[in-house]
Every structure is written in structure tokens, then in C-alpha cells.
Image 1 (cartoon, rainbow, N blue to C red):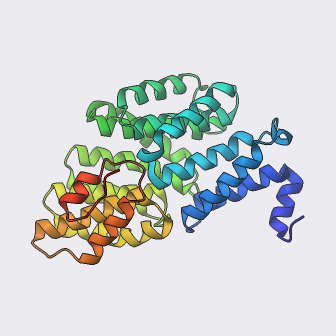
Image 2: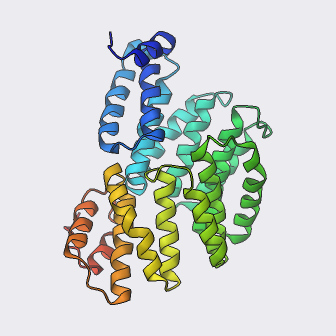
Image 3: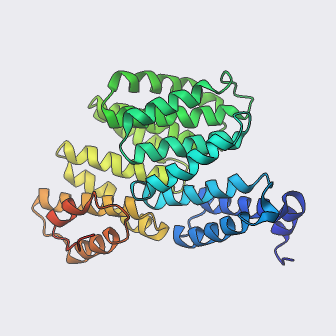
Length: 317
């Protein structure tokens, strides 16, 4: 029994596991709460989903997806192998006629991207897209198709495959009018491709406009917004515009920390400290300490050397 009327209705309609799934989705996509407590809840729900009573529950894959989404938002590179293992298993088990198959497929591709296995990730994305029916804005698979196309833009940008990036961004631009205005996360993710392309082409005006488009009308703690902060601040720094870079990175640090988005917090901290160094400004000791703390929370060591170069004391892993 529950005293929460909203949960009571969901339990009545979807069962206990379904109600938990919708609660996790609300917290992941529409909340500003820290990801750590959400992660704790997701783990408990997945443990519950593993009981024999839920063996055939339609929401069993969904709550596993929620857990993987939280891991991805906390530290994608650090959890990428675990995400790959679980997502690939569910994608293999679930029929391609089910939306759940493509939710797991998207996480499978993201996991390879998080491991910098770009060629494998792109082949996998293309393969999953090929199993979808023709794109139709009126059908459920349209959003799943767009998720995978967005990932192809991410992969192309990471590989420096600019021709592919242009082609994919053209597809996303054409599809944008078909996505409802209230689907802010998907629209922002689609517009991220334009930011990636503008950065790749060194188009400063388009980069500024695209960054504004990605971050407009969506909460500042959203994963796509924090990632765009890192992307745009990195671009500004590489262009020698470190003062502007710091104006983007500095406010994002506290937002990422409150969200427990540790990967983004670490990268924003490093950008802020790199800006201090480039501008000849003394780095605040507090900022260096913040970097030391957050680097210690990551499950991968790929940022350790850069953090040390900025004065952070990082223990061997």
C-alpha cells in the first residue's frame, strides 16, 4: 500500500514495477535531484525486478534501462563496459518489434562510444537503424530512430568524420519540425549535432547560435546541456577565447555537482582551471580541491594526467 495517490494510480494501471519505472523516468529526465539517490533507487528496483514474480513483467527491461541511464549520466566512460554488457544482452533477448529493444540498442551504441570504439559504434548504430521500419513521425519508432541518428552525429564528431557529420546533421534538421516542442530533451540532442558541425567547421557564429539552441528551454542540469557546456567551452578555449570559455564552464560546475554528474563536473573543473592558466590568473585552491574530489569519484582514469597537470593530487588507481 502507498499514501502517494499518484503512485497508487500507477500501481493500479501498471503494477508495482511499472509504477517504479515511471517514477525513475520522471527523476531522470525531468528532475534536478542528485543522481546518486536516483541510482540507489534504481538498483533497488532492479533487484526487485530480478525476483521470479517479475520474470515475465513487461517493465523488467525498462527498469534495467533506467539503471543504465543513470550510470551513463554519472560517468559514461567509467561504466561503459558494464552498460555494454547489460544493454547488448537485453537487445539480443528482446524482439525488434518491441520499443524496449531499441532503448537497449541506443544504450549499447552509447557504451561503445564511451569506450572510444568509434568504428564499432557506428557499424552497430547503422545495423540497428536498418532493422527499424521506415521513419514515420506518427509511429513509436520515430523517436528511437532519431536517438540512433543523433548517436551517429556524436560518433562522426568524435572521429573527425566531417562529411558524415554534415550528412547526419542534414537528416536531423529535416526531422526537427516533426518532433513536438515539449520533447525538449530529444530536440536539444538533435540540435547538438549542429553545434558539433559548427565546431568542426570553425564557424564561431553558428557555434554560438547552436549552443544557445541546445540549452534554451531545458533545465540546466540536463545531461545534454551539461555535455554541450563542455563541448562549447572546449571549443572556445581551443580558439584562445579563454575568458568566454570560463564564463561557460564556471557556472556549470556547481550545477553538475548538485546533479552528481561527476564526469561533466570534472571536465568543467578542468576547463575552468585551464582558463585560469591561459589567462595568467591564479587558480583558486578551492577549485583544485574540487577537482581532486570529483576525479576520485570517477571509475576511469583517463582524466588523471590532465588533472595532475592542473595541480590536483590524484592517488594511483
